[in-house]
Length: 216
Ligand code: TZP
Ligand code: MG
Image (cartoon, rainbow, N blue to C red; front, top):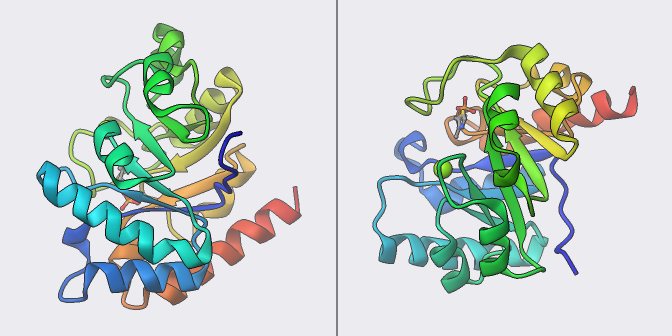
């Protein structure tokens, strides 16, 4: 049975955005603020370091039941006992990833735009959800592609037909619009990792998202 998950407020981590604040403390505050999923994303960390960080995050998240997803690295996810993996279009195809991670773990795959999806339908096979974006311009990820806007988000979500989480340049002021466009939740990096008060930032985002869902 697949691990249940709630895409409402999906924190994607970035240690570079915490400033002097401790990375794990930042994630702990975000969890207290109500994030519903956490993804370990750290393109600069080596394999051993990533496994160690993933283990610590898994232990930190355990009491709240918030699932841990590892970006890009199936090997790290399996070694650390994470709850899922998130892959990009240039990573392994969905069906192959599913064979490796088994039926319980969550599989997410990024989709940048509708034509990219059309070109790679097999790549999404076995996925539980898609990450769609960047919806808005973002400085957090270099080479993340052109912003696809709310129209792009709506088009991809409709075309793919899987649960979707919007990403890229999202904060409390534009989260509701992403839900209205068809996303089940929003994924954020800087709006929480870089906030002065990560707990309050998460709370404010969740409030916007829940209100948007309630009024749908
Ligand atoms: N993938 C597409 S955009 C992005 C990722 C990881 C970064 C989003 O960061 P932010 O700070 O929420 O705009
Ligand atoms: Mg990736």
